[in-house]
Image (spheres, rainbow, N blue to C red):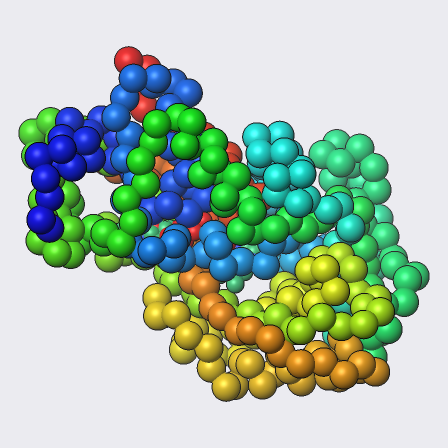
Amino acid sequence: MNLSYWELDTYFRNIDFLIIGSGIVGLSTAYHLRLKHPKAKIIIIEKGRLPEGASTKNAGFACFGTLSEILSYLETNPKEEIYQLVERRYRGLQNLRKLLGDAAIEFQELGGYEVFRSEDQVLMEKSLDQMEEINRWLFPIFNRETFRKCERNFGFKNTIGTIETPFEGHIHTGKMMRAYLRLLNSSEVSVLNNLEVKNLTELNSKIEVELKNKFRFQASKVFLCTNAFTSKLYDLDVVPARAQVLVTKPIENLKVKGCFHMDEGFYFFRNTGNRILFGGGRNLDLKGETTTEFGTTELIQRQLETYLREIILPNQDFEIEHRWSGIMGMGSQRNPIVRQLSENLFCGVRLTGTGIAIGTMVGEELANLLEPV
Ligand SMILES: Cc1cc2nc3c(=O)[nH]c(=O)nc-3n(C[C@H](O)[C@H](O)[C@H](O)COP(=O)(O)OP(=O)(O)OC[C@H]3O[C@@H](n4cnc5c(N)ncnc54)[C@H](O)[C@@H]3O)c2cc1C
């Protein structure tokens, strides 16, 4: 890099806190570090021109898990752990809304719906059988019935029923990230784009950072907010999981409004204005979708279009306007890893499919790992 003295001095010297990754966790970490350390030099390094992971690519569901997902978690995890997971997601959403404001993120509490396809009879019966018990169990979190059978007709075909919750909504993901950047602009945090960190070396009291272009500099404390890409820098239980999405052109008299989940969360769709945003289908090719490469595949895009035609918009003409993908960070557990890895290295990663709900909170927890000065 051909840097001037001024550029070196302003961005690459005497860095107190270096955050790698400008997704929701990186931005939240920077914000919460600034609250506690008003004079620190805080720099965020991001490999993409825009954030290049999941935070600007997601579906914008402000959600905490469908009834069938919660039941499936309960099959393999202690009850107390799952209760805390749901509570954390719901409280996390309140934190995000409070921090950025509903208007700035275009939060709309339109409700969440789990749609059961014709082949989901067993899953639906099991969910309905246990719904009351789950509602009683979750009552202290929501103070109201969490799930109920939905009688509304959205015009779907080849479905056998829907379970709804009033506590979900959707946001405008791009505006959420822009609102975060606005907060940071006034906090003197610099985001440096198009710079990929290749290596971290622990020195005595600092960490040496090497970029892909070979440029090296040092920082006192480094925070890995690299989610799906973490294993390239540090060996942790984080595995990339690509998720593909499409959005239709505007559809006249669209009845579908809210956040919809299908097939235990493997498919998700919502309206954005009068368009349908539809994503998922990773379970069609789990191996192929375990990748950090962006891209869409014919197999999954074809299935999304089939479901649009046969289930979601059976009586309407539609055209696809745009397709994209994002990369989530998964692992053997559903909880994020928020941890001090060494004296000067910290991480907040593995946000799974719930970063909108818990990303703000994870950034706060990560900033709190630091000893007060
Ligand atoms: C298609 C899709 C739909 C989703 N839908 C929802 C949803 O509806 N609701 C929900 O709650 N969650 C959803 N998620 C998940 C959610 O988006 C993520 O959990 C969340 O964005 C993770 O935030 P993050 O900051 O941890 O990671 P990211 O947003 O991935 O940020 C990590 C950043 O680190 C950067 N980076 C990585 N390595 C390096 C490096 N070496 N050097 C420099 N920079 C680096 C990346 O470029 C990236 O910008 C979805 C995800 C996808 C992909």
